[in-house]
Image (cartoon, rainbow, N blue to C red):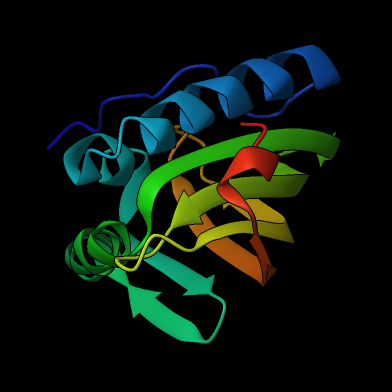
Length: 138
């Protein structure tokens, strides 16, 4: 079975890495789990905070749960560096919970892509800070 490629492909320069990262940000902001998991390899290893996930199905179920709890989710990804098939990223996202409390979450993320442009490993660490709804900026 031939694997489809997800362009742009590694190895990156900063321009192509930024282009790839913008595509990922757009998919996350769609809040469509199918769009997001299409960027991951079938056997991707992922850590979001304290959750360890393996493969697209676990990632999909995590996202469904996340977006049921993190309402109004919007993320901004900022490329710090890129080398070969890796990226270092600063992330900032905002959301509110079911009670209406708004949050801003800051963190760092690292990505490892395979030769076909799929995320093979993704590790994200972040901190959530309560904010007033009027302080949202994303």
